[in-house]
Length: 395
Ligand code: FEO
Image (cartoon, rainbow, N blue to C red; front, side, top):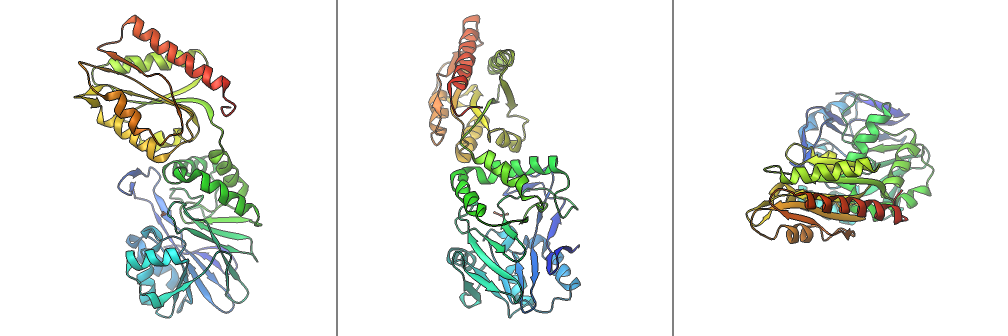
């Protein structure tokens, strides 16, 4: 339990989850996470902004007790996902006079997910304000980060914006504000890659909307708070821009060494020509690292052998993940081998169909690569380099 004061009347009352290793039973959390919730105490009314994951509800309650909070007027819900909303029912039980303030879409989701009765809600529109006396809460709709109902709250008197998931990082730390910039940058990039990247174009619009606000503090609901907002705003502008970097990512898996030899040859050839390239052995790689690499790489080459009649399942999984995350990749292809036949190339290509990327001619060979097969790999590497050089979007 620990209450941290941001400003006079503004407290962080959420919980650090040092031990959580997985989110959504999918995303590895190498640095844990936090569920930040904020108490805003005006001279007339008191609001709680989001709650915590239900596993940490006792921490939230202890924090509120330590501040002698005997009533709440409002619980602001920015996002219906349970790591922020899941303790609202417990809060309403403890503070029965409190109303849940949110947008109509989030209200519907909270009714369905948490069975909160309709009479507990106050609906607010984009730009609407409520007043706690000396402090104003202005609601700013920012849908699809990463659910359709997401919104932020802006405090114009203090230039603080509470953004919930947006700009967050899965980073457990005792620091209230960002103090380890390098670690936070990587955690925020990993978080963006895994959660926000599919909504890149919408987030670009939200960044423009937020540009119109004077902001000194960005208080997210995961990870440390930004007291230098430019640090994370600039990073998001970079990640969401249409530009990609002169980089090649090669997620691969190999059973008997043929695909691995092809990948090694591709990697060596690109390295020798000065192109940044990173192979990810899908047997051992952290999927978060792979997702991060997709944020800015110009090209993705999937390497896979043929299992029965299709790709190796680990390669198909990586292709499925890349397709779901919708990175701004400009060029894709695949390399790999087969024993007697199959539909491996078609299945990988079909799985990548959401990517708005040019498909380069795959190199798929029978058996172990021969000298002429390796020459085909070199030609693919040269084509990648030429494509990068020609594209206005690669820098
Ligand atoms: Fe942190 Fe989308 O919940």
